[in-house]
Image 1 (cartoon, one colour):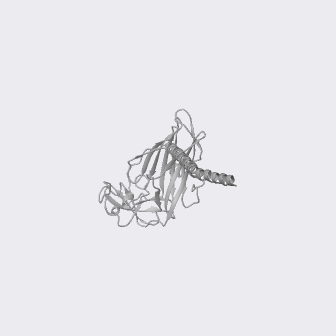
Image 2: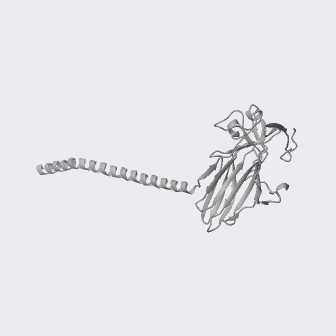
Image 3: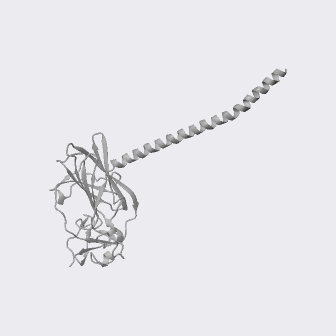
Length: 303
């Protein structure tokens, strides 16, 4: 009986000694497990960061050029070697569609190059800083040249309307400038009053452009020796629309794209409506009329 009690005491002694060891072992296992999770998360995080950096490398850098009249002009180069230029004419200049300004704007009372300035620019050089919004329609120009050693496919051009508001009220102001030389272009038009993808059908070529414009019908094969130039008229008569676009290109199994926006922000476009219009020619202000049915300015200006 005494031996049994002794054995029992001996077992209890061993259990009491092993308990701290087990607790220590549990802490060690838990710490190793936590370290494993931490390392795993770090590896995954680093992998995601690397992937994100890879994606950033695939995004083409856009080189914006200084342009007047609110127009946006940038060039780009894709990983495939495809190069291009995007030019969005926004209101002032060759298009003669004008910019809608608030009635109290300096654009209504001050000749181009005069009046208040914003960061060194007058209203005609930076209309947006003076509350101006391009009056429809505006024109998007895209020039694209493929790589030297192979061709790529120009798959399409997608437009995105990001916001719709009531048309702006005010005065349509234009300041005519010299126009560039002509050429041969693929022509299309979009209307934000239509349902997405907004392309008008059929894409008829205006009579005044029929000699040097061809209908725009994607896709196109583009190379260094066979470039493409696109001209797209953009219109709306129902909303102050904010919009962007995406140019899609395929290089074999690789898909490339170019974001078209105003320095990272959406473009804005408002209808002409039946607003008061004026045209600055040099320093003289002329009342102007707009044929809203034909979307054309009356060239017979008052003296």
